[in-house]
Length: 381
Image 1 (cartoon, one colour):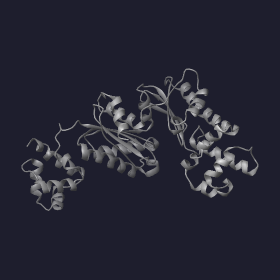
Image 2: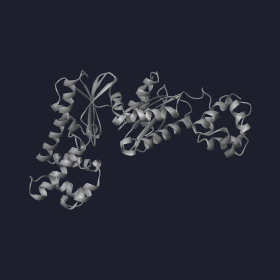
Image 3: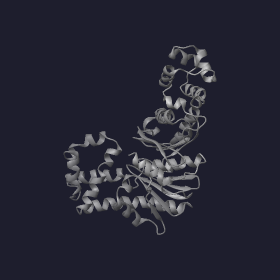
Image 4: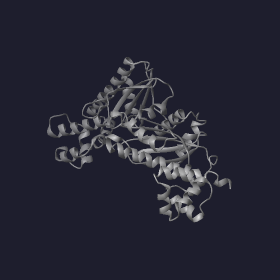
């Protein structure tokens, strides 16, 4: 009997989350509305057949319908969203990872606000259906600062989950939390594009990172574009011979001049995919490759130094993104141009675990074992 003590409340909760009336649910199950009313008031309980149909109709597990508040620790959810993928991690105060999965992109600038909110709802609902009540959700996603996108999506999610502590912020917050718990720091994401922030308390000050048309600040796009320009100039005899040229030609399957349409038909990430060729050419002793990388490292360091000079944000520089985390050589080139006294930190935690740390914080929960959370996350692959 103890197993049924939360069943009435659970039926009502999941029915309302689906936006169903008692009458509509009864019609789907082919029973009377009075029967549904009795289930939700605890005056009767569905038989096994109806329980299974009920779970299927409400898109939850039978286990979730029967679960009592003491069955499992109330879970929290950390979310790291980007343009192509969004990672969800459900975890408990003890540091146990309850669930981990990846869905599509949630950057509202790429997929739209409505689609972004729907994808986040899909992931949260998936966790709720298995693990029951959720205490808090922290979403850190790219594109959430633009035009107040994050606040709009936060409002949508709060209407759907009124009893959940919920916060939507930019993904730079995940980066910072994965590298430090200090209030003040400088943070940079260096991937296809690059952006730098000065964090002073709870305030973020953005420097550069306004897209490939307006910013040049040491990004994968900048380096990849320089590789294509170098190869094209070499082909036309307008530039110096470079070991970059045959690498680009092999990547394109022909001369740059014969592949212009293909180059222009792709997005920034395609251009950034040529950046590794510059590092390969550098390993082969190419001076032009060395100059391209040095110029881009100097550009990125210039913005970081400006943040340190302009804001009381301390001396820690949190660096993230594929161009940095996957390339010790480029990190050292950036470090060469940083002001003395600035300390570079490359987070060892994945960004989504930074979101988990922030989720625990807004939920008023002290994570008991961060190492355990990291280990269990890695074990789930």
